[in-house]
Image (cartoon, rainbow, N blue to C red; front, top):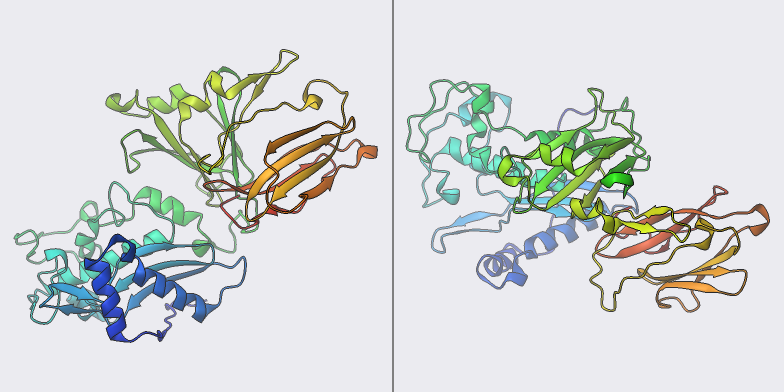
Length: 445
C-alpha cells in the first residue's frame, strides 16, 4: 500500500496568458465566466485520466502558474472551486501560497511558526488573512482542503474545514501559536485540542462511508444497492429503508442553510439499521424551541453514502400522502422524485385494479423514452390501457411483456431521478428486471 500521495503534472493546451485572460474575465467579468477555469481543468483532467464508464476519478488540482498581480490587486490563474460529475470529482486551487508550505515533514513546525511578513510587492496577502508566512500556509492549505472536501461530497458546515476554521489550521500541528497579523494578537500560549481546526462530525460521517476511504474489511460492498426508499404508513409515520443500512439523517428547519441537528443510527462498526421509523414529533423534539414549528427538510444517508431528500417532512406524513383504495383500504405514497418543472408537467394518479380486485390481468408495459422518461403505458388483457405522461421519445416506445402463464406481476420500479425522472427499470414478482429505459446513468438511483 502507498503512503505517499501520487502527483500528476498535467500540461494544458492553453498558454499562461490565455489562462490569465480567462482569469480576468472570471474575476471581473459576467457571471457566465465564473466557472471557466474549472471547466478547463475538468476537460484536461478527463483527457489525461480518460475515466471509463462507471469509474469515478477523484482529483484535487493546483494551477501551478497562479501568481500575485499587484497592479490589478488580484491573483492570476487561481480559482477555488470543488464539485464534478459522475466520471470526475474535481477540486481546483492556485499556487499563490505555495512558497509558505512545508516541503517535507521536518518543515511542518517551522512553516507554521514562521512570522516572516508577507511582502505584497511579490506575493498575495490572500483575503487579508495571510499577513505572515504561517498564516499564508493556513489559508493556502486550508482553503484547498476545503475545496477537496467539496469534491468528496461535503457541503458547508457550521464549523470546521467546511466553514472557514482553517485560519487556525496550524494549531493541529504545533503546541503554540505565534503573533497573528489577522487578529493582531500575540498568539496562544498553548494550543489545546478544543482550539484546533477540525473536520465537522458530519464530514467525518461522509468520509466513513466514502469510496476513497473504504477498507478491505468494510462490511458494505461498493457494488451494493446504495439507495434509500421513503414512504408513509399509518398515523403519520414515515419509514425509510436501505439495503446497506441507514447511517444518519440531517434535519434542516426552514431558514437554515447548514445542518445544526442530526441523528446517527450506525453502530461503532459502521453498520446501520435497514429500516428506521420517523415521526414528526420525534424529529421536532431534536430542535431548539425557536425552530420547532418551522417547515422541515430532511436528508437521509445510507451506509453506502447515498442521499435522499424529503423537502417537506410534514407533508409526507400528512393525509396528502395517503389515498383511499376503492375497497376502502388505505394506500400510501412515497416521497416525491423529480421537481415537476419540465414544460407540460401535470399531476396524474391511477390505482392498479390488481391492487384491490383480481379481474383484469396486465399483459405488458410500454415505456416511452429518449434521453429521459416521457411516459409509461400499462396494457391489460381487455384491450384497455392506462397512460402516465405522454408518448414521446422513441417511436412506438419499448415493450416489456409480462409472463401471464406464470402469473407474473409488477413488483416495483428502479428509478434514476434528479430534476426529473431520467430512467426507469421494471421489477417483477418472478425476479426479472427489465433494462433501464431512458438515461441509465442520469440523476441518482
